[in-house]
Each structure stands twice: as C-alpha cells, then as structure tokens.
Amino acid sequence: MSEGSLQAPTRHALAWREPSFYDPAALEQELERVFDICHGCRRCFSLCQAFPTLFDAIDGTSSGELEGVDRRVYWKVVDHCYLCDMCYMTKCPYVPPHAWNVDFPHLMLRAKAVKARRGETRWRDRLLTSTDVVGRLAGIPVVAGIVNATLASAPGRRVLAKTLAVHPEAPLPDYHSNSGRARVRRLLREAPPATTLSGGPRATDSTRGQVVLFTTCYGNRNEPDLDTDLAAVFLHNGIHVQLAGRERCCGMPKLELGDLAAVAKLKQANVPELKRWIERGFDIVAPIPSCVLMFKQELPLMFPDDADVQLIKSRMFDPFEYLMLRHKAGLLDTAFRNRLGKVSYHVPCHLRVQNIGLKTRDVLRLVPDTTVEVIERCSGHDGTYALKSEFRAAAVKIGRPVAQKVEQGQGDYYASDCPMAGHQIGSLLGTAREPTHPMKLLRIAYGI
Image 1 (tube, rainbow, N blue to C red):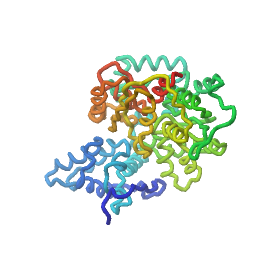
Image 2 (image 1 turned 120 degrees about the horizontal axis):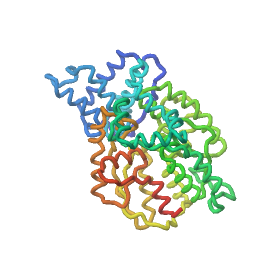
Image 3 (image 1 turned 45 degrees about the vertical axis):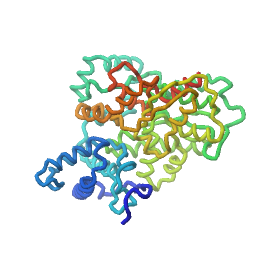
Image 4 (image 1 turned 180 degrees about the horizontal axis):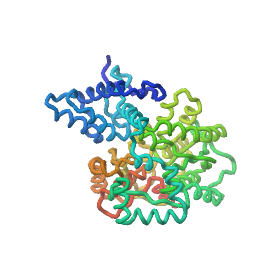
C-alpha cells in the first residue's frame, strides 16, 4: 500500500444502475467503513458541516468511537453534504488509487439516492430542484412581476418560510420573462459587422473558434446577463456563438437530491442536441461552473460507456478556460479600454474541482491596472443548501470567512463565477454591495 495523495486521484464510475447500489445493509456497511476512516484522519473538518456533525457525534459517545454513534446521525451527515467534491479533490489522502478507496461525495450521493428511491425526499426539495418547471412558470410575464414582488417583501418571505422552510434571510434570485435565450438571439441578430465572422471560425489546436452556448436554467430565467455578457465577449473576440435548439436543466440540482432517474431523463434530452452541434464543428460553453462540471464529470461517471456523453465531455469548456486557450494561441483581444482596479475574486468549489487552474483570474489579470485577490473557500451557498431554514446557520458559518476576506480586501469589485455564491457572499457582507460576475467585468474592461 502506497501513501495517499502521492498520485492524482482517479474516479470510479458510479454503479447507480446496480441493485446493490440501493441495498440498505450494504450502504450502512460502507458508511461505517468510510466514517471510521474519516474519524481516524479528520483532515476535512473545516470544509463543510458534514464532517463536524460526524466528529461531534463520535466525540459525544462514551467510547469516543464510531460504534457508539446513533445510526440516525449518519443521515444528518448525508444531509449536510452538498457534493462540492472538495474533500475528494483537495484533502482526502485515501482516494483511489489508494487501496482504501474512499470517495466520500459519491458515497453521500449513494445515500441520497437510496433516500430518494424510498420516497423520503421532501416536496420542498423536489420543487426547488425542478428548475426547468419553476423557471418556466415564474417567467410568465405577469407571473414574474408577482413572484419578484413577493420574494422581495417581508410578508412574502414569511409565507415562504412557513410553507417551504426557505430561510427569510437567504438570497433568492429574481425571475425574468425576457429570458437569456431570447436576449442572446436578439444580440446575435443585432451583432455589428465587427463581431461577425466573414472568413469562418479560426480554430486552434484545442478550440474550434465557434461555440454553442448552453444558457443554463439560472442564466436563462434568473440572470440573463450571464448569457448576454458571455455572448458579447465571445463575439468581440471573433468567436462564433450559437444557441442550441433545445435545452433542459443539466441535472445537477437533481443529482444533489439523489434523484438519479431524473438526471438520466434530462441527459436523454440534452445529449443528442449537444452531440449534433459538436458534429457540426462547435464547442460547448456554459456560464455556470456546476453545469459545466455536470457534463465534464458527473454524467461521464454515471454513463461511462455512453460514447455521446464522453464526446460532450471532451468538447465542454468553462468560458474563461476557453478564452485562455484562445489567448495562448494569440487570438484573444487584449486591447482593453477600461481598468478594473482591485477585484476580490471568489473561486467556486465546482470550478476548482475541474482542475483547469485559475483561468478566470488569469484572464482578468490581462486587464491593465487590475489586481485580483483570489479567495479559495466555499461560500456556503451550494445549490439549495443555503436557502433552507434548517441549514442556513451552517451555510452562514461556512461562508462568513469569504465575506470577511471581501470586506478586508476593500476592492472595487467582488466577483464569483457562480452567481449564487456571489449573492450568498453579498448577504453576509451587511452592505448594499452587489457582486459583479467576472464576465461582466471583462465586458466592462472591453467597453462593449
């Protein structure tokens, strides 16, 4: 047996279609094995609330060992895991290829899947993760105004807290009837000649110079600027942009709930469409790190033998990863018109685990008279975790160090690639400051 963390971690495929995956006795046995290893190590105590929940329960027993812990605590640990993957990618010395084969996030996912199959997930959680449906209904023109007014009012938040147990101080996004997809279509129609391609896309060794934009549920209905800013910056750099004809949720919200059957249905909707664009010579980009990670990692691990899923994995890019690859080939416009000053930049967990480096920081540093202070800690938002009343206190504890870094930095801007993380940080600052997405910063720097 070799020492852990001396080799790059490898990930085993998720055996979610095997009957044994859902066997309660086998699951409990694996939980006991892994929890005992974690108890003997404790390197991950500062990452999230899952590990303190486990370690406090162990320390509260008379023996100080796992065997004395009530098995109901196991499910509290599971509920506190939001699948950020940071323990696997940055802390755990026992991940494969180590013989102990510890994959804590995917073990928690397995437990969530067992819970989902039993029908034990709350209606509230099923609703919050149905982003397609909620966005489509809340995006109806008249309905959007009513929803936004309700979410912005104290009485409305009290009703939401009582009916859905959504914390009244948790940041909630607006909904837009003028969707991101509609705005990008208009932008593409109105693109001035300087941003259109007359001689065809300019490919590099690693990029094709033309992308299909996966707008994401959040970008489409909650923050359409995510999509229009990305499209504008890419067009400005001579990258051809198109929209997929059909798009559904990437599946990450349902994955975090353990509803793997729902993930498979969404995959069946998205993969054929994205494959067609790749076959036409396009790459794929999306403005939300979690959505990119879904296609880069989670779907390939769920469907390791699906050639189409693996093809999409090979052509899916984080937007700033794509821009840096273009810069490496000398094809990025660096004639910025405006400085940005000092930027406090938060790196989301689902971007860190893509193992592409700090590409957002690298691009922003190309802007003259701009400094970027990097904050590599969890914001505590984590999908729907920070919205729920029962987890809000833990989310605040996790995210407060990030907010303190932003406050101490006194930058001209603070930003996160994950817009929800940005608003979570804002909710902890105690000021009226709003986050500015890195792509918006780049658009400001270009003056476009």
